[in-house]
Image 1 (cartoon, rainbow, N blue to C red):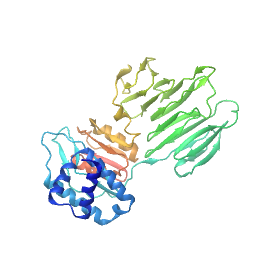
Image 2 (cartoon, rainbow, N blue to C red):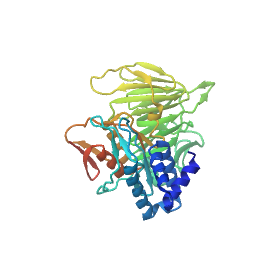
Image 3 (cartoon, helix red, strand yellow):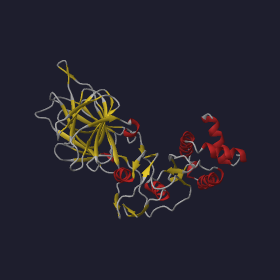
Image 4 (cartoon, helix red, strand yellow):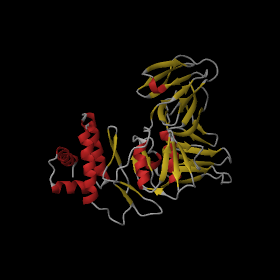
Length: 394
């Protein structure tokens, strides 16, 4: 079915003119991810027109959910993905949300749950810039324009991106700035050499305001995706070297790659999407060269091997955060919780150890925490929310 026909069915449903056969057809279509995505787009369009804020829209939507529960039954042997859609401030479930619990059978989520005592929104754009003199700028609330002049470079904010533009000669030694994204924030920066870096939540990048040496060096923590610019000097390419939390270094000549170096992750990863990079472990001195589609991993636990492991990468999963998506394919609950801690700025505690649960599926990162808690509860994850602390119970 093409998008136009599908939209006509949704429109008929909204105005109450959809017949019995059409409702059954819609129920079946909404079991498929591609039609759930189309519905999400239609809902956003309705939201822009002000319709989605009306109480009758929410009531109609919940009525459709109840219909789907009675009209459409899942195939017992399938493991389903889960998909989310949001209309205005109302978080709704589209044709059910599906989880796979490693200890139980596939579960369909259809029941409504009350909202938690406080509503914790999803993360957003924002960062803190620390200048060479130690002064700080909170970029969340600043408008476009020049923010400062730093050793031969103008600092500019342009449509949510921090940019460094060369302006005059640099004086003396390199001076450094640091960009930090707190929990619940992400941000994008164009470095003085034209390279662009996207910072995930709870990440940082330290860089010179102007690259004057034969090697472009930056330091990062957390997770950063780079699209490195090619810079020539005296007929030679200047390499870019990324130091990841003093655990390993990535040397590039012009490429696209992602570095995940969170200190609370059991494995540090460098994933190459384009070009060619060399990854060196600062612990062992081992060096590997990656080709596009490969990932170099280094275990961080005490007593773990110091060897860099190269494997084929799941590029879609690696880049999900940059594309505004959580990808929980084959993820254990502790991995999921670490992502949620950073994005929603919450703490997570386990009362009696980490449950043996795996998840399958994707969800957009713009959904408030209460929407995710509904899904957790229906997948038999027991918890309570105390302020900004999520306590997982037996």
